[in-house]
Amino acid sequence: MSARILYTLLFSCLLSLSMQAQQDPMFTKYMFMPMSYNPAYAGTAKVLDMGVLHRQQWWGIEGAPMTQAINLHSPVEGKNIGLGLNMSLDQIANSRQFNVYGSFAYHVPINKAVKLSIGMQGGVSNWAADWTDLELEDLNDPAFQNLQPNLWLPNFGGGLYLFSEKWFVGLSAPMLINNALRQETNNPNIPVAQQYRHYYVSGGVAIPLNSTMVFRPSLLVKHVGLFEKNELNNVAAPTEMDVDLSLLFNNRLWVGASFRTALQVIDQTSTYDSVDFWISMRFENGLRIGAAYDYTLTELQGPAQGSYEIMLGYDLMRYKGKTKHVRYF
Image (cartoon, rainbow, N blue to C red; front, side, top):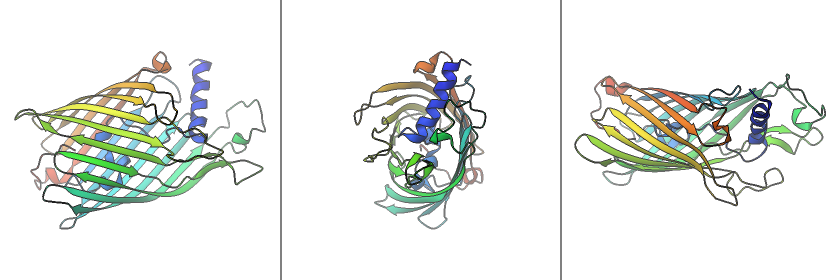
């Protein structure tokens, strides 16, 4: 790997901590892992649902971001309540963040077809790094006074999820506390790096085309640190948008394509990140398998061989024959 790519990767890692860059993991198959960004989704699928996902970003570049995530959620029988568990491990270069959060959602009936889910989550993040192998030009650099940080950071968040069987709209902020990750040596009240609130807006609709085919467009918009301005972050990160178009065949096979871009919002430069393709298969026993590939459109297009995801899911109640409904979301 060239020195330029290595320096770019390390700089991006530090920049994502010290400024308002996207810090939460991103998923191309976000529509299958909604518990990762909205706790209000818990229990809305009407089954005990589990999803496991592995993502390798910028495949072929040493130290590139890599994420594993597990979502588990279920309705409480006879109650308008959903419970969930969300765990993830996000790694980039020599730093990592492990998150574990429990979720509670209350489903408020609006009418016979529509419900509003109000969700909350709470848990802890472990952020750690090992920069002992770095060759520093300035040994007194305040960003590297502790070369092996290891922090446990409590946090909480919430979300709203308005849904029916054929459409949904969501709004969430899964982590509300801006935890400090590193402080200046001479002034512990001034953070060198910190976490920032991530805001998500999502939506989707299922449109039957005929008896065997359903068209499902969906959207996920992400923004970091909305309305937050201080001495550490005087520029907000670009708002990122994922637009996905997919087809469902015979309630078994999903085929989709999506486009990820950063919008021209709050004086930011618009960029085009990737074009993505994915496939997912659902079996009668409740098992789901899927994969995705991202073709990057950034300057990493040369050294990187794209990004990929592998997903495995399981609907326990579907396997036991307790549900007959068709799931679009």
